[in-house]
Image 1 (cartoon, one colour):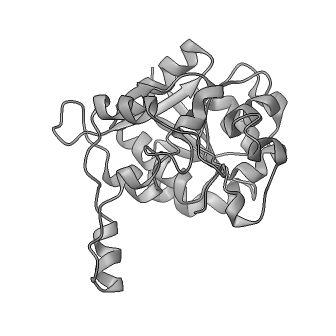
Image 2 (cartoon, helix red, strand yellow):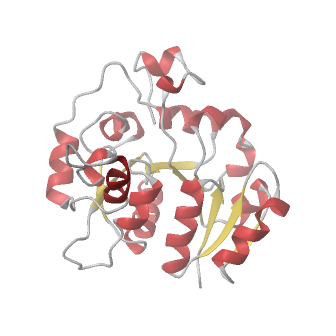
Image 3 (cartoon, helix red, strand yellow):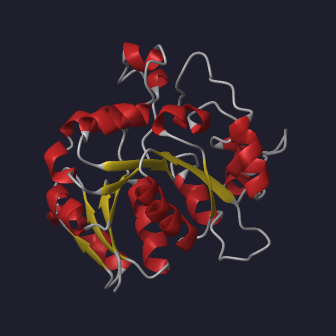
Length: 245
């Protein structure tokens, strides 16, 4: 039976997840805070395997539910609707944006995904598909066995949920390594070695702005499972915690 991915958020990240999921044979139900009527153009572009829904409908339909939304919006998520659901948390803590800051996150008392899990009490939350841009999420994806296939990390506290999320990420074009628990997910958060820039192409000094933009659209050099494991194991917790877009 075809699995369904429920997508919370229809911005650039949510759209990238939808395109990758559909290309891999999944159905998607995509939602946003403005309602299904605002998603008709997107759904038409995505094709017959996509439909729009309310946030609650996307949660109910999803075998896996992705949080393709800013962390700052976490309290707006309908926590009770997530009970029993496997949730892929793509959010990141960006205090440098000036819109959302918490002392417990700044102090390292918990990770951003532990905060999300605390809000979604009945969910089985897995951190993943969060550490590269929407552009590189699509440009880096490769089929299994491809020489240029790269590796992404996940973290979580539920082994079955991690297995389900790993299967999804593998299906859409990536190898997967386990970075540990949600408490250990700081190892794959902003400003760590496996975050963002490792998946982007190197832009040479001295090129024009337009040329830099063109180069940036391409994939980064692939990360092997062995390199990903080394980057995770050798990670040092950033100080200050969090990043900027």
